[in-house]
Length: 87
Image (tube, rainbow, N blue to C red; front, side, top):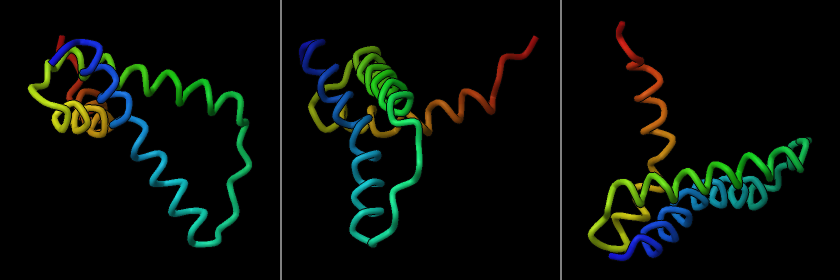
C-alpha cells in the first residue's frame, strides 16, 4: 500500500472513534458539552494527523490495518505513557 493511502486510512481510523462518540451523544438526546470549539478542533486535527503518521510508520498491508492503527492510537499512546523510559 502506498504511503499516502496509509496516511489517509490512518486519519480515517483516528477520526472514527470521535465521530462515533459524538453520534452516541446526539442520538441519546444528551446536550453537547460546552467546549472551546476552536481549541478542540485544532487538537482533533493534530490527533488525526498523528494517527495518519503512525499508520504510515506501521506500514499496513491493506486498508483495514491502516484503519485499525489509526483507531487504536489512544491505546498505543496510553501504553507508551504507562511504560515510560527507564533511566
